[in-house]
Length: 193
Image (cartoon, rainbow, N blue to C red; front, side):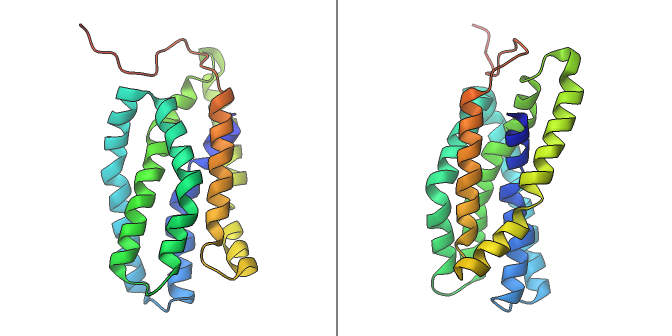
């Protein structure tokens, strides 16, 4: 479970930065300076939404927010890529795409690391998380640009990576359904009454 949950963590970000930068330069002839501006905006969007999603996860539960993010990824990945792949490729359109992807991505990423800690008993928590999280990152996360490029080349359309996002969203959803809390800690912030 940790292998999948940790591996899916960087997929959205890697897709929006590494892969998308390549596509903008190679396929849409954007200048590298323009792409770096878009990349900077993307990173700022992630920085902006991270604490917001962390606060939301404290209110509704980390697992709940991650499940919602996984379902939104499954449902909206293809329409988002279809939106970005049609008509003209303007910076405004790219920023809208990146903002929506940042909201979806941070809804999963913000609570994920603290949630992963609840999946292991305290005596094996560090080794369990570090081994399975990093192995998942190696298999699912780091292969994102390669798989995305393959899908675009094979399908011949920029929406190809949406299928990888749908796949990882489905994997995360299933993993979250079977995950069980081993720490005994409540993952929802409770207020005193």
